[in-house]
Length: 117
Image (tube, rainbow, N blue to C red; front, side, top):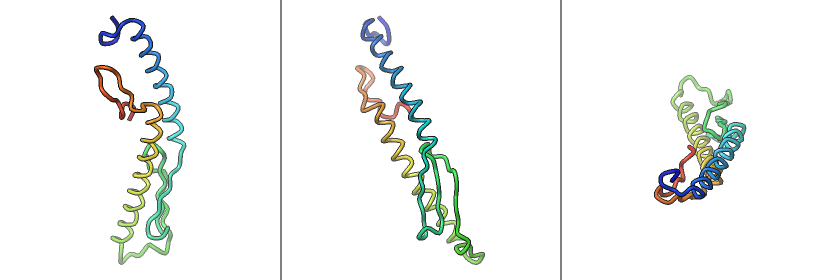
């Protein structure tokens, strides 16, 4: 018996499926790394750009929003823009990874929806 007590053919089939999932995962991860997701706050006064992996690529701040007497407002706008961009990135990432896992259900292992995070 192979993989966790699975018969030979079933084990080979499962291994083939898992290898294919790994290839798809690597391709999607590369695509997510190239994807740019933008979100703004304050009517576009602050813009955050992240990739599909949730990495911050850029923060743009319009000069007119910079007020030395109200740094707190600028901090709030940057935080809001980053949070929105990261939320959008996580949604995109989950949708793309669902293409691979698709609620995969392996007997004895349950569902593996977050297997490749």
